[in-house]
Amino acid sequence: MISLSPAAPRLAKLTALSVGVAFLATACGGTSTPSSTETTTSATGISCPAPSAAPESTAQAGGGGAVPPATTITETPLKIGSLLPTTGSLAFLGPPEIAGVNLGIKEVNDAGGVLGQPVEVIHRDSGDTKTDIATQSTSALLGQGVSAIIGAASSGVSKTVINQIIGAGVIQFSPANTSPDFTTWDDKGLYWRTAPSDVLQGKVLGNYMATCGAQTVGMIVLNDAYGTGLASNVKSAFEAAGGKVVAEELFNEGDSQFSSQVDKVIAAKPDAIALITFDQAKSIVPLMTGKGVKPTQMFLVDGNTSDYSKDFEAGTLKGAQGTIPGTFAKDAFKQKLLAIDPALKDYSYAGESYDAVNLIALAAEAAKSTNGVEIAKQLKAVSETGEKCNSFASCVTLLRNGKDIDYDGQSGPVTFSDAGDPTEAYIGIYEYQDDNKYAPSKEEFGKL
Image (cartoon, rainbow, N blue to C red; front, top):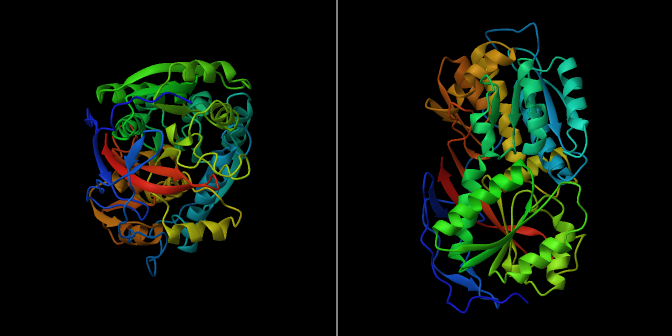
């Protein structure tokens, strides 16, 4: 077993740095009220803030009543491509993201479409960085005349196709890219995302492990843009909160053996271990538990916070926690997603994908054009100031009545910076149950 610090769990100082982070409650969507100070203590010495209930958010997908007809009719219907994973190490993220896209498209078309024409969607697999699937899929989508591509999920994959996409004058809109590198990318104003930069997720996770009483942390990290970028922000926040990272072991995409990394991290005797991986966690977790690591010492991230009910014996992950950018998926939204895909088990980034569709469609209406460059010029405008609305039908009604709009979506408040990044976002914290499925625990809100 990993030796834990004898010091009593302490409430570490929370370092906001450039990010204002407020603890929010909880599995029902959160309020601005700080969470309860009551804690749940595990046998390992890690003691995290306990969940507390809050009212369900009133924001719902869809709705909006009768929609006035379009005042401008386009000759070229809006065509959106998706570049999302159905194979590779992030394939578990594909179903909720694709369902989110399809739900958004359905609701847009149910409301009469964009500029008087139904919107078309074309789905293609992104694969992962071990293959060239993303490049081939991107070429196929561009060849079919899409104005925007939603994806990729992986920051590493997006880096392989971003220049190809923006070079064609097409919007790339990712629901899940979190690498800070995209903030300063020379993207000609064509790269956007609804997922916040890992500057935020990293600070939340680093601070959260400190509030749980961890004084030392070990990390096992995927050696790519996503993994090393997130690890850097986790480390900065944890150390600023008074902790110490005592081991940081890297591995490469495509590796299948992780014993060396696990042994080195365990040898450092950390209080907590952060797993910054994709589905490699399926191999790493059994190695760790086999050497005495308790699940309550494990902290996962969006790349691996998934349903492991069919992968591990019951109880293997009970008490482990993971972070996923975005607010918790509300029950009404889940039901709409399940109507699209009844087999859906995860909801990660479904809201961000749904919001991407709505924002692209609304920006096209505001631009009175289905040209990618013209749509991009309106994306920031439809996300800020103006009259609040949270569905395509309600928002497009306001637009067609000459109103300025401020779209807030299923992923939370959406307001873009000039770089195409969300300027504020929620990070959800989830806890694994005895069945190795994760459940909402609490939310934190931050501004970038």
